[in-house]
Length: 386
Length: 155
Image (tube, rainbow over all chains, first blue to last red; front, side, top):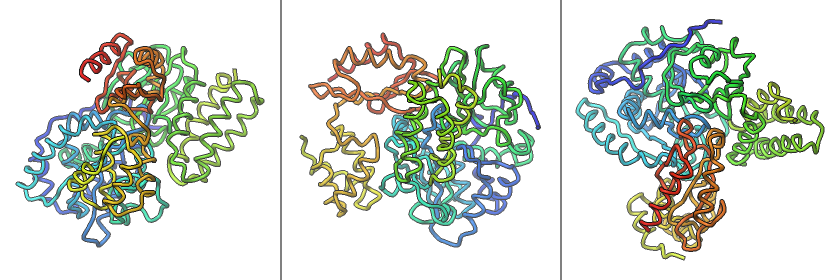
């Protein structure tokens, strides 16, 4: 496995002249923009990791006058706070990425879906948007961005639930296919991208795909912003090259007593100390939308698991049975094991339930509950039981 | 109970009368009146020419669109893992003591409501809470007392 070590990078928050980058993007052919993003190897930074260039290519290929760029700023994964920081510090680069994407796919409208928890940022973001609109109009872009506010629902970070929410409905995920690239918001072709992805795309246009793809590994190109919290002396936002091992990460950010790292938030994976060395942070190992939580030996992994399951039981939209009932049963199940109302082998039944949820749930929420459940139960079984 | 007719018209003029306008209108009512009454939802349904069930269906899905009586200051304390690990319990105890209410309740003068919420994106500065739109981070019981005193004086 390729290991790049821990290297700090400064692409996302780097100051750029938006006029310069947007002017050169404006002069490029649409497929040239898409080609550059494809060549860079950029994968979506929200967590799922779909190749951004492909998403744009598919959306561009649909012949339809009305298309949309949606910026997913419904950052709700526990432990993730990088998108808030990006919007707070470099919103103009988010808008810039949207304008470039809009040109590439042939969309004249961009929508930022901002989670309700970040509403305090809105007045400032709108002010910055105004001057951004003036800037791109001057260059020649025919593109407008508007905001839609969320109202406190984790599931709306799921792309089709987010569309439902923009349209004024309950944030319940849709069946796929059709995929957003052919039928997204208002049933029009839509490219929905994470905040950080859009900023990265702008950086790729500025620096060229070559220099970007030199960063990271074959499966995880480039760098990404990590949100680091938990038992660490240095919590916060760090942009790091992809392809480091969990051990290298812990050496830098741990408190000397790290027993586990939860990579990717509540829907991600728990890596125990004995696997730090062999686990790469990236799509070839444990993928993450940026959430990195460190736990030291004073923490009970039962409490961690219980907290996550409580989270999912509340945030499941309730539309499909495996997820609605599954989340609640997993939560009740671990409580019963802890209270010794059932034998510890009951955990095996719960693991089977988590597997069923993975295959039978309609969207990523239900499908990924089993990630944390399995990795915590398997690695910290005694903490769950005793 | 509050009167909402004029506000719904005002918000519909601003956001439009399509299905897409529903969320911003409901958010606007909550911003002004803290929660949604049945009357408010019926009024919105009439204005947008959709069924009241559709309005309730959307409203009830979102935790920030309360359909229960809520106070002028909505306190949401993050209960997700990092905030829990870093002292959320003490923050809740302090708030309950000060406001003389439990989690989920509203003070009798309808000034404060206290609830727990899921991750609000301030894990690196835990524990954290929101009061209406404003985040407060790196909380300690002492800090919470000061913050709430400030709100009590400004009411």
